[in-house]
Image (cartoon, rainbow, N blue to C red; front, side):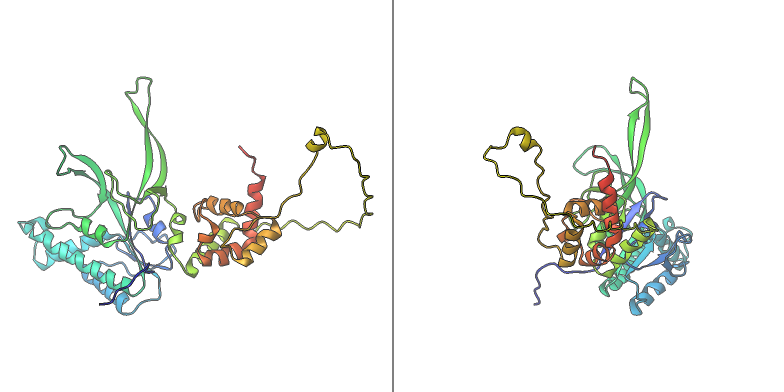
Amino acid sequence: MNITRGIQQRPLKVVIYGPEGIGKSTFASLFPDPLFIDTEGSTVRMDVARTDTPTSLAMLTQLLTEIRDNPPGCKTLVIDTIDWAERLCITAVCAKNQKVGIEDFGYGKGYSYVFEEMGRILNLLNDIWERGMHIVITAHAAIRKFEQPDEMGAYDRWELKLINSPKCNSCAMVKEWADMVLFANYKTYAVAADKDGKKMKARGGERVMYTAHNPCWDAKNRFGLAPELPFDFGQIAHLFSGESTAARVMSKLAQQNTAPPQQPAAPPPAPPAAPPKPAPVSDVPPTAADLDDFQPIAEPVVIPDGIPPALADLMRQNNVTESEIQLAVGLRGYFPENMPIANYPPDFVQGVLIGAWAQVFGLIQENRKLPFE
């Protein structure tokens, strides 16, 4: 019996689903070094690595087997999308049994065959995951009626656009397989359009992602994420370790700052001034006016524990506080603004905060110019 304790660093199994066009494929492309199996051809306008588009279940199975037996060197495998992969399963099952449609089997047998094929796909993905690759599955979302066994009535909720029936619950199987299920949607508000409140109009449209279960949608995570976050990869970037985090953030900095801000030129040294004459000592105590004119000497920056010495030296040299770095990082969407620097991934600290200090300090200087509200 082999007993282990503590947290194990393993690759992630992530499901991202939402309405069409919200940016699921673009979000998945920000995972470390992704390889796409594009079942629906949605990545043709994206600069990503991809396999040939699988046109049959046999071709999809062959691709997954080849990736499992001969890893291509990528760090993330993306199935985009799983509901189109399920269509390949349905087509293969009907062709094998010489049926026109899945309903022609009778008694739900066709759905059972599809469920078995979907299970084989997830088994292959699990084998690839065991070899050290992150697995990302994207899916479309569908609104379905849901009725709780202990309550009367039914209500609408968002689910994965997969078969959800007693004989073939692919929707539940995919959710159980994943470590994290993220539901992306547009946050919309209904507001009154007249003074009586009888007519309503939709407002908003901000893209958000939900990470926890809600009666209106399926979602989950095992990493303590907030239930609602902006649909931005920076919100989950801290879940990944290694050089990929620094590379992605450096790329973002390069795109957002085509020309790094120039450091202000140091003024020429002033000629040495004559030493001031010592002020006469007076026995008269200072007045209230004298105390009002008193200007305290600026104290040195306090460096919290856990900050690497190289970064601490840069902070002292430029008189930068931890809160200023947290503000700059938070505004860029890399990590939450209240996250201590000691909790940042080491590669982010070394590759971005230290390696790209000129750009980081330029952002801090810009924030210092902003007026306080």
